[in-house]
Structure formats: C-alpha cells, structure tokens
Image (tube, rainbow, N blue to C red; front, side):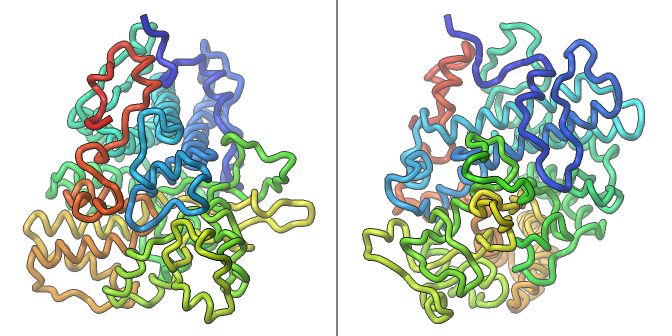
Length: 517
C-alpha cells in the first residue's frame, strides 16, 4: 500500500497559505493570507484578495526557487543556452542541459510540486470564494486563468498529468491517473473563455496592480493553448483580439524590455515579480525559495573566472550559468540581425574585448563557453540593491517575462500562416522585425517561406525565455536541431514523471512513465 501522495496535498487553508512565500514585490503591498481557519475561509473580500496574492507568490517561488527554478528548467535543454559554470556545479541543472534528466532529478521533481501547489491554491479560491460582486468575480476568474497557465506548463513539459479541478476531499481522491492532455486542454479552454468576461483590461487595473491577470492575459494563454493543439483558426481568432485591443504594444527599444524601466510595461502580458527592496545579506537570505529577490539573476551573471572587467559593458559578475551557445550567435549573424535585438540579447567575445572586457583563464575555466556573453536578463548594478550593508548578489529585482506582446504577434503570425492566410500572418511578424530593424518580409510571401521565417524569428526574439525547446518539440524539429547535443526521441520530448509521484500515487505505476524513462 502506497503512502498518501506527497506531491499534491490538500491542507487546511491556514497551513496552505502559511506555506506561501512572502509578498513578492513593491508592486504588491498586500500581505497574503496566513492564519485563516479552513472552516470560515474566506470571511470577507479582503481575505479572498489576499488569497489570490498567495497564488502569485507560489508562482514567484516555483519559477525562482533555488536551485529548482521552472524558468531554468524550461530553458536548459534548448540550443540557445548552455548550463555554464563548471561541469560539477549544480548537477541537476547540468543534467537537464546534457539530456541526462532522469525520474529523480530534483529540479523536475520540485517544479512539478510547485505547479501543483499553485493549482491547489487556485482550486481552493475557486471552490470557496463566492463570485457575488465585481471584486470576487474578478478573483475567481483570475484563479481560473492562473490555474490554466500552470496546467498548460505541466502538460507541455510532462504530457498527460493527474488532473485536479477540485481539491481532493478524501484520502482516496489523492490518487489519480494521468489524464489525457486533450481532456485537460478542453477543460482549460472552457475555463478561460468563461473567465475572460469577468476580467478587466490591463488599462483598467490600478497602477499598483498591473501585475494581475487581465482580459488580455487570459486571451493570450487561450491562444497559446489553441496554437499548441494546432487549432489555427481559433488561435488567431483570440490572439487577434489581444492585438486589436490596443492594450499592448512593443517597447520601442528591445533592450528596455529586460530592464527595470520595462517591468510591467506596454509589452508585458504576464510577469513573475521579484524585488530588490528587501536588502538581503548573506546572513538573512532565505535559501530554499522563500526570498523575494531573483537569485537566478545572480546565478546567470558572468562568472569572474571567465569574464573580467565586465563593468566595461555595464555588468557585474555573477555565477556563470545560462551561457549563450555559438548556435544562437550564428543565428543572429545569418539573419543579419545586429541591431537593438542582437545588442539586447548577446555580445560576441570580440565585441566584449573591444569594449574593455577580458576573457580570463585557460580552457579549464571555459565549461560550456562558446564565445558569447548573455545580455538579456543581465546582471546590472541598477537592477539590484547596492545600499551600504546590503549584499548586491542577493537582491536582484529582475522579473521573469512569461508572456509578452512580441510572442502574441508571432503566435498570431504562425496561426494565420498555418490556416492558409500567410498574407495576414506576415503583417504580424513584420511588426516584430521592424522593431529589430530588419527588412519587412514581402506581403506576397508563400506559406512555406513564412513558416521558416517564423521559426527563425521566434528563435531570435524569444532566446533565453523558455520557448525554444518546446517550439522545436511541437514543430517536430527537435531531433534535427538537438541530436548532436544528446537529444533522443521519444525520451526527451517530455520530462519524466517524478519518481516520488509514482511512489506516492496508487493510480500511476512505472508502466505509466513517459517513454524512455
């Protein structure tokens, strides 16, 4: 007899919310609910609001928990980045990068847990908050959208997964088999369509609440779910509503998207927030994922035994992970993309040296280094806290941009094109190319040529954002592009279901594991 599921748990609401990380940014001044009796939750609208803030806190934790970040896990198998640092540093990350990920990898185990914790709290809100006024209707709709996004991430990464739309009420209900992803997608579509009606536009959110889910967020997630199922007409139908709403636009300068000035800006559709305001030191930083800063920004900073005098290009040293590959650099060169998008994404070693930087050491220090420095999500002094007595390395306030308007435009372009409407698709991709200072594609481009252009555009525009690997999987291009790095189908098309889940869940056995694991 297996023990109770230790990944998906129903907890009393006061304990569940007590586990929630602290409030996640200066944008959020509401303290999440902490000690609420499960018998009377929620007593009022304020408690319902503090509970939805707790959902954002769980997402902050799951995408930034050291050293088990969903953001990192999504990126590492791709061909635009290498794990970096040294070959023995953070082996679970190195194994993800090297296609050695197995069922007991702590990273893919931890993020599975993180997604389900977030879903659990969303379920609690949806079940217990009565949508009796505009505020509570918005909160319930918000919880549905965030639940849909977290389930989407699970399905993309793991395939069929146990599906909990209602939290278990008995011990037996903890044990669920893997639900076909088509069934999950169908339920998410229904939920998102219903939620859209009760959500405000981004422009209608108060200035201090621009981080919250809006109508455009729900539509963008719905469009992405349609896209991944190749429901092309439905995808461009809903994504065109985001575009025509005029609620979003591209930042004029691509380089600004990743800076503090671009946080929650005109291009932002869904962001995970962090703050540099806590003033952490080595003595009070909460290792394990309870801190409010983005420790992975420091993890990704240029390592000081490889990159010297990084201040010459406006950076400060970090711990050397997430190094660009030569392949992404070559892709920029092949595109003729040497303008603001290139300069806001990577820097070639010759450019770094010409600016006053130094490449240090011997090849022993060059694990995963292929001649490029990453600029997107870079470690800059003004993105952290340099106050006296504070440890700058521990205080980056860099937000993860999970969905932005450029992605919506490229998804719409792809959906139009695959729906035999390349003339409409080219209009959307050209908006992205125009910002990158690239020539517009011809309006009479054919479907095959536009398909190739969209693939290349997504590779460059969304580099290091966790899209590349999963794009290659859904396009059927992963074997072609990644086999020299160790990718083998079908094993690496999905992350393995964590061994802990199989041990704990009576409804799943090793026979239900993803192929190859």
